[in-house]
Image 1 (cartoon, rainbow, N blue to C red):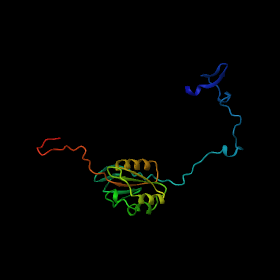
Image 2: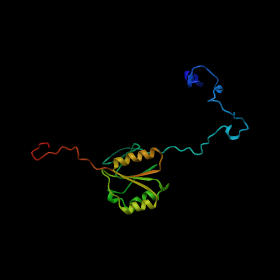
Image 3: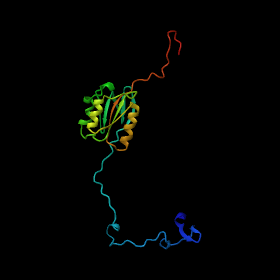
Image 4: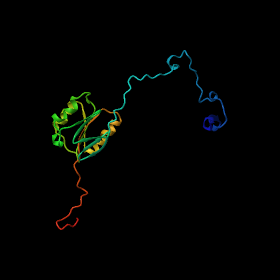
Length: 191
């Protein structure tokens, strides 16, 4: 191995690289003053690792969304849903105005609790304001809140879940976009 043969040596003009094969311990830069032996306690002993708990990652992933609902791990979920790995539940809200203390209680009453972690709310096609009483409740329960439009909320949930963060999501499907529709007037001409 050519790279292993390059050892650092002293010269009168500074440090040079040499391809001469020299024993490692003859180099003043690679030599240790003391070699470890059995009497050197823990430093000489092997390190072992014991796996206390093997836990498979729950791996919930939101694959896609539409005005009808969501594709979560290959399962179609129609309408608003609450994603709390490993569970996916129907969420009884129609719009962001329906996000109340009662509807949000789903996220802090179930076990395991998501206290001190993150709840991502997807409010549809655009970011909507959340009732201040809901914000206060989540703060009391020590649940961080991220409010986004649904497409961004899905991406944020997937990212946080992939980092194995304790995250839940409340998602309202985005509405149909009419941005690309061709409008016609009464005479049948396109505009």
